[in-house]
Length: 77
Image 1 (tube, helix red, strand yellow):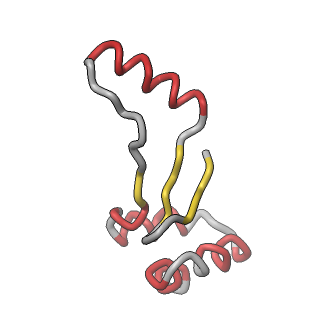
Image 2 (cartoon, rainbow, N blue to C red; image 1 turned 90 degrees about the horizontal axis):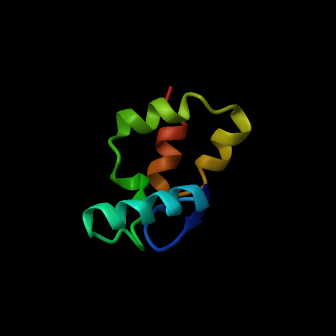
């Protein structure tokens, strides 16, 4: 999985396995999921805090540099 910063927040782009799975879903339901992204900014703070709780100090410092919200969450006790 690759993380790209684009505009507001962080966008996660799935790898090849997820894209091929998406292609199979297209065939089954007739809907296209090309270009769909997941925004971490849309997640509730409680879930982001749980995710950040698994990071070590260096990774928390990096996460705090993403945006203002992540800075405050990464520095939360």
